[in-house]
Image 1 (cartoon, rainbow, N blue to C red):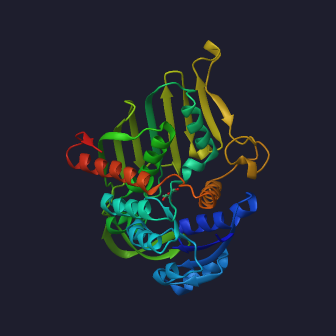
Image 2: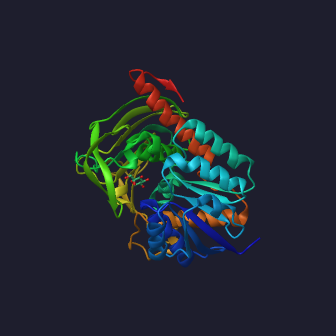
Length: 384
Ligand code: SOE
């Protein structure tokens, strides 16, 4: 087996930047069992992808992903395109024997996700899904605390992912607002993160859903160009075909109820993913906008002076911290992508299957589909 993993990344938007940073950084921070070669970045526009290759450190730029995944000097395919192309690329890459890292959402439909999970199941190559927040140290630590029984039995869960980048009616009609490319709006893009996180932290799955989705602004200026990761709208207007917000309740397999909010209209909230898990013996609470901190409540503690303890999750023994800075020097949004690369490379070296798997991604897709089905039937309860 080669001691170098030669990577091809398909796509070059915001996630292309985040994944490129991780492929560059992870080998320089962690003692990975394999060397990483950032071989090829692939995109439709030759000039733009050549510029991205130069800026982000890829050896080559290409415009034909099929040709690249057929190459025998490529070992890993990292898919960071919009969701509508994930299935075709991932299934072809796995069939070519390439390991695959696929950005979330796994796919834009349950049917597409099912096919991807089947391809991963029958392939000897490894497939991993990019729900990166699982690899924020505070959230990995939270999962370990809950699994150890520290908060007792999970009795209620609250999760919200709030952004506000669409409050401006002049924000253009980007691919994220078109169902045929993004699959869904806030529900799939950021609601999927909240669903995966709650299932990851509790070790349980959502079995029944009741919810509602809504589009607040139905028409926007058609995007004419992109400046960096920002779109620019022209005079022509186009229809928004996805949701702007989703509110839903889920019944977890352990019996507890979980409430979810996913919105791009929480004015003033920029990237606020919050989760609070309430248990019989305690609770954990997290906010991505303060991502190095985990708040832990222990009911079995010293009584009236017991409050939430503010744990700064940056100690050397905390998850993933062995590669970074001394306690208190803080990590950011980008570090979880390096942790993702670390875990993928370790799994490839050891021949194990890293989480989240495509099967887990398919389960998230089923939850999202249940929200849409419930919303279309006046929020009645739907079996996942
Ligand atoms: C949406 O704005 C978004 O970029 C998501 O698509 C990402 O998955 C999330 O990490 C940050 O917000």
